[in-house]
Amino acid sequence: MKKECRFTEKELWEKYLMLTKELLKFIDQQEIDMFLELVDQRQTVMEWLQAIEKPEYGLTPEAEAIRNEIKPMDMQIMYKAKTWLNKSKRTNMAVRSYDIAGYAPAGNVFNREY
Image (tube, rainbow, N blue to C red; front, top):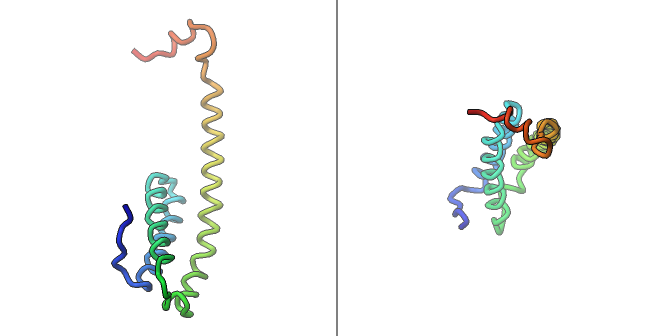
């Protein structure tokens, strides 16, 4: 079920900018759960912006300035998210390399927690 938008076009652009800044902050802090929640919120704001039939504010120089401010932050977010994902994959591979489930059953007895 889609949420109904109750904001003006200008407010939506300001919210999009604010969410972008927060995304950058939380990816820097490695707060991935909050980062993903904000990604969903920003996606909703973008859908509301795209649903506007006759955008007026989006064509103004003020909105262009907001978009120009967002672009470099988006690039940083993408770079940092890819870096985090690659690091996470390497960590998972390293953890799995120590998994001895397929080997002698005697080894599993020592790894149990009682």
